[in-house]
Length: 291
Image (cartoon, rainbow, N blue to C red; front, top):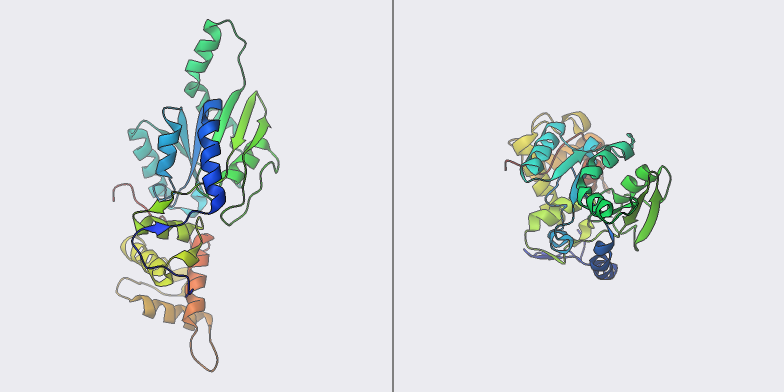
């Protein structure tokens, strides 16, 4: 466990470049017509920055649930229904496999009816629709942009903080897209939200106690997916097992041994988090809308 681990209810994680991004976003919002907020399908609420709702105001908005191929498909459908009940358009996308331009464009057109009506009123030609992509780090913004652009227009990587500055990207059919750096809240009052972001890779896991991250994941598995570790780690049912028992079993089954014959529980811990984060374990969601 890292020496820098913090034990506190209110989790603070706010690298310097995010403060600059907040200021730029406040100015850029005036320039765009539609906002696309990208959320991780495994934890939509935890991967939503409440500050964005404040700065975006009444701008037309849609939600893209990214990494849906890592999430429980039945739960993702419930999230789409949940957002619809709030009057928000949401759709689930596998950004690495499916071409999404036509879907997003079709959805965005009704959101700019006021813009088109205003242009018609003043005898203007239809102007390009300006899209803004926002979201917390490593949630799939750059992957979405590259998918829309049909090329590597934005840097993408499986770690937070890859995009560091705003950039405008021209799309077909008179669409212009603005990419922004991922922005996290300055503080997480609910530590569980920060833990979920560590599990999905949006914040560095080192800022939280490893035991808490693992404990949270295992409790979710126990409650919703008791057989989640069956295929990868040959553990049939974890419902009645303690965390240490589970880690011992993983280390034993994977032959993770330290000096001598002592089982390496730390390695087992990190591999469990990594295989969940990378979708190797299977499709499991961290949040349920009815919970």
